[in-house]
Image 1 (cartoon, rainbow, N blue to C red):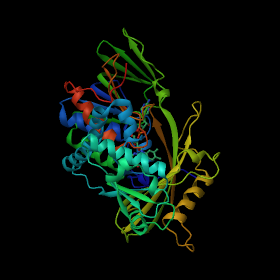
Image 2 (image 1 turned 90 degrees about the horizontal axis):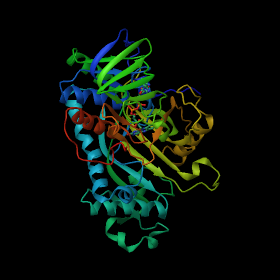
Image 3 (image 1 turned 30 degrees about the horizontal axis):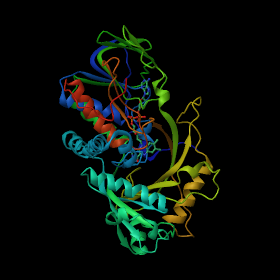
Image 4 (image 1 turned 60 degrees about the vertical axis):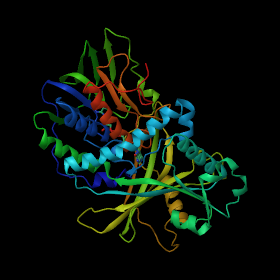
Length: 457
Ligand SMILES: Cc1cc2nc3c(=O)[nH]c(=O)nc-3n(C[C@H](O)[C@H](O)[C@H](O)COP(=O)(O)OP(=O)(O)OC[C@H]3O[C@@H](n4cnc5c(N)ncnc54)[C@H](O)[C@@H]3O)c2cc1C
C-alpha cells in the first residue's frame, strides 16, 4: 500500500517551487522546511530585522510535518516525573510551561498571519487500562502539583480491579467515578479501560499550516524572506562567524545557520578553526517509523483527541508489546470539494529503524499495520460489527527520538554560528513552535536562561 497522507492531500497541487539558481548571501539560513523551519523563519522575520532564507531538499512539509497525527499536545515523550528525575523539578517545570506557552505563540501566528485553516482546541483524553499506567500518570500529576503546574483531571472507575492497590499518597489526585463515566469520557465500550485523564489538546494540519505561513511570509516580507525547494544542503562549513552552505552548484553564505532538519539527514559539518562538531550528531537521534490510517464519516460529532493505553499483548515477543498505545483524532476535513465530513485518524504501531536502514517516504505501508489499526478501531471506537471501514488514507512518517526525549533548541556550544531546532520526537508541533521563538530571541541577541532544550557541549 502507498504512503498517502491526508495532510498533504489538502495542499495546493499546482503550487510552483523555486530552487536555488545562484550563490546567495543572507543573515540567517534555515535548513529544512517542516513546521520547525517555517516557524523559525516566521519568528525571525517578526522579531528581528534579519534577512532569512530556507533551504529545503524536497518540497516543504513533506517530512514528519506532512506525515504526523496532527494532534496538538503539550506533553513530552517521556513521563513528566522522569524528566523531574533527570533535570530536577524546577527545570522540568520551566520546560513544561515553555511548551504550554506555544499555544499562545500559535494563536499569535494565526492572528498576525491571518491564517484560515481549521484549528480545533478542546479537552482531550487518555484512557488507561493497568495499575502501572495509572500510577505513572498519578506520579506525573503529583510532580505537576509540587511544581505549581496545572494538574490533569483524573478519573478512576470504582470497579477498576486494581483500585485498592493505588497507593494512598495519590488519593487526592483522582476522582472515583462509575465505569460508564470512563466509557463516556473515552467514547468507548471497551471493557479494558478503567481510568481516564483529561487535558488541553487540539488538531491542526501542520503541512497546510506551513503552506499558509509561506504565502504570508512571501507576501509580507518579500525583501527579507525566500524559500528554496529542491535545494539539498550537503555540507555546512563554519568559519569565523560565518557559515558556508554547500548546495551543490551554489553556495549560501550566512551569519547564522539553523538546522531544522529533524536530525536525520546525512550532511557534514566542518567547524574550521574550532573544536570538531560531532558530524554524526544525528545518529544520536533514534529513528522510529509511525503508522497511521484514516477514514471519513459524516460530521456528526465534535473534534476530539483520545489516546488509549492498552494492556500489554499476551505475546511478549510481539514488537508492539513494549508500548501498546493507540491515538485517535476526529476533526473536520474538507477535501476534493466535499465539505461537512469528519476525518477519523488513528496511529499507534511503530517500528524501530535500524541505524543502517535509510528511511524514505516511498516505503510500502504494510498490510499488517493497517490490520492492527483496524482491529483497534473495531474493538474500541467504531464497534458496529457490520460496518466495513474504507481507509482512504494510510501513511507513515519518521519520528526521531533524542536520548533525553527532549527537542534540541539553541546554539551549538562549540560554535554559536550554528543553531538547532530539531529532534522531532513523537510530539513535535508545539515544541517546534516554542523552539522557533526561542531561536529568534537568541539570534536577536537576547541572553536566554539555561533550559533542558540546550544542546550540550
Ligand atoms: C507518525 C507520526 C505522528 C506524529 N504525531 C504527532 C502529533 O500528533 N502531534 C505532534 O505534536 N507531533 C507529532 N509528530 C511529530 C511531529 O510531526 C514532528 O515533531 C514535527 O513535524 C517535526 O517538524 P520538523 O520541521 O522538525 O521536521 P520535518 O517536518 O521532518 O522537516 C524537516 C525538513 O528538513 C528537510 N531536510 C533535511 N535535511 C536536509 C538537507 N540536508 N538539506 C535540505 N533540507 C533538508 C527535510 O526534507 C524536511 O522537509 C508525529 C510524527 C510522526 C512521524
